[in-house]
Image (cartoon, rainbow, N blue to C red):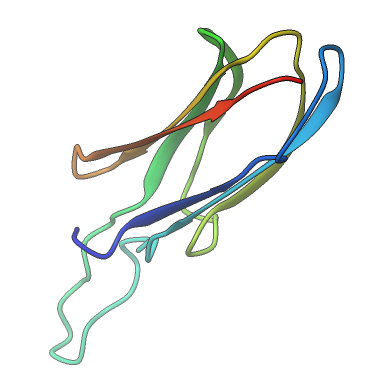
Length: 108
């Protein structure tokens, strides 16, 4: 799916021990498999079914998504940061596609 686009927002700065807010959004239609097109054919199910976030090599959030999640899934969560490190965000699609983005957070 070519129009899938992850977006991530991390703070510009943080210190060791801070709790930072992480926000992600991925552009995705999240088809449930229950709708029909103009010809009456069922539109195949296509959803982001799993999301993970790793920080400094450890999973800090893992979510299993179902058909009731709206298009363009948005996550907002807090993470306590102890060291500079990479945040790795991964979205898994029903069609087997995997979308991943990495953002570095340098602590001051």
